Every structure is written in C-alpha cells, then in structure tokens.
Image (cartoon, rainbow, N blue to C red; front, side, top):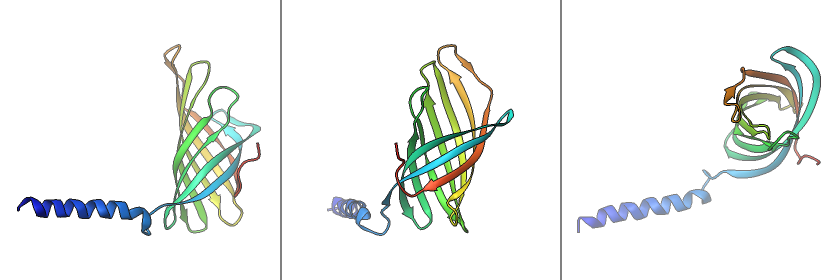
Length: 159
C-alpha cells in the first residue's frame, strides 16, 4: 500500500511531461532565415570586404527568447555549424552563438559569435573570437578576431 502514493506521483509527473508540448511552454518553430554577413575587420585590422551567407532555423522558446541553429557553407572544408540563442532587448535582437568547422587540411576551428541586429532595419554588426587547432601538426594558432556587418532576410538563402 505504501507503494501506491509513489506510483501516483510518478504517473502524475509522466502525464505532466507528456502534456508540456501541448501547453504554452512548448517552443514553436518559426522557419528559416538568411543572414548575409560582410567581414570588414580581422585581428590585423581592416580588410577587403568578404561576404558570406548563413541559413538558420529559428524557434521561439517563449517570450523574447529564440533558439538558432544553422550552417555557413565553406569551400575549404565542412560547413561552419552555428548554434545558440537570441533575445530581444529594446529594439534590438542579440545573438550569442558557438561556431565550429573542420577543414580538409587538418584545422579545427571554434568560435564565439555575438551579433546585434536592429529590429527596425534588420541590419547590424557582429564579431567573432576564435581559437583553432591543427589535428595534423598538433598546433594551436593565435586567437582569431573577425568583425563586420550583417543583414537579416526573413526568407531562406537563395543558393
């Protein structure tokens, strides 16, 4: 008989967990967006602008918080994979993302990206700080810094 209250609580918790996706706590998939970035600065200073596009899946986690995951194609290896969160503060959307990439020459890249977009213009700035490792030579590079501008399109990237 003493087992019955424990089983009742277990069934209650299981039912609650199964009902969560049906409640207002569930995340909602919003779709794909395209972010077109232009690199204007690297650790050594200003550079000739380089443009690239990344396609991201976005889900609302509730309120002003979003989950973001996607890729940026690369000609030097696997795509760069980026995952993270975004949140609205005032009239801006702030992203914090972790990025990784594997190159064919042995380099393994990692980076932390921060992007700030104006909700009024869907444009803003980004910077990324990274540290990379070469699995072939077993060496690290110096810390990498990249910054520039970014524009958001509410549609998938045209490839």
